[in-house]
Image (cartoon, rainbow, N blue to C red; front, side, top):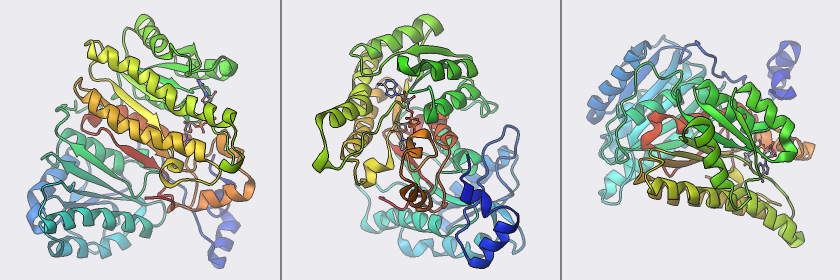
Length: 454
Ligand code: NAD
């Protein structure tokens, strides 16, 4: 589904012409293929003087994954990835050596290369100089992401609660950011906490981390939901596909494709949570992952807004999630649903705002809000709740946007193109995976570093 312009500027004569005219040339993004190498080349790990120990732990992790790892640039290697470890840097002036060792390596970063920072999250008790450098990494990372070209991305891991650089969730996040699974995630930071338990990742589980798990995906008949169902199934999950009866044909198609089951259900039904839980338990013996993906748009300027448009969007996009979560939380409190993973679909519209979408943005910002609150409640039962906020994704929903607006929306990101449903699905699958246990209450943008919002 690569858009026509991106295809044209990457093929034959039109590629030469685009080069000559100096037109923006979105890269063809490398996406996950089973069996393909994790990175597009060797990995360089650099750090400031104080973070040597963490850097050694990161290098050992990468080495354990069979990657070629170096601790120093050599003026010749075309790097597949650069990992910048700043976990123990004490003040802004101390970051110089690590940062200023990067320019040469960045010039030789391969197309679809990766930069990942590993640092510590700023915490309330930090001394001012420590808070400055920790927060500084945030601005550094987001700016560097905007400087990279040719499909390369930069993302960051922020360790919290004394999590070590090789905490299982830090390793899982590092692997996700380095891989082609994060093709459309750019300029984002994830916080990894040690507070939410410790999960020893089986060394061979990277290909099928959801083996033996049961996952429910709402809105699975088409678009992003269908891609999520397929990706979770690829990762080993048995998938229950949920959609409205009117979408029965698409629903059956997805359920067949993933060898899962179909549940025709309007998520706004008052007993939707009970129905989902009962279906998962009776047909598959349990429930481990719930993905709230069903969503609608009914765009109108607020000056022209009517109750039908406002209330239907609120009902599907946020109230249904809240009500289903209440049922799930009650089951968790009864001791029946330990370790549950909830991943909800937000949107960059809910973060940055979007003209004509007060109703939609209200609900999507609401998802960001309830995700953080639900995370706290689920933590007591070993569960996590996270949200994924897609930017512009090529689906039927976005095909309805007028042509000119659609073109602008696509190009207004660091990667100069829209994402694919699978890009959102990969982020959801990562957050649902056992390795992501230390990541909770967060909203991960999958937007190619869309230039709107934070
Ligand atoms: P889509 O319209 O292609 O698919 C949505 C699916 O949800 C449909 O199959 C629909 O039948 C189902 N659905 C709607 N109401 C339902 C209900 N009451 N009960 C059960 N199922 C219901 O949308 P999409 O583009 O695939 O988007 C999926 C999610 O991602 C939505 O939450 C959307 O808001 C979000 N999102 C999409 C984009 C994008 O660019 N496409 C951007 C940001 C966020």
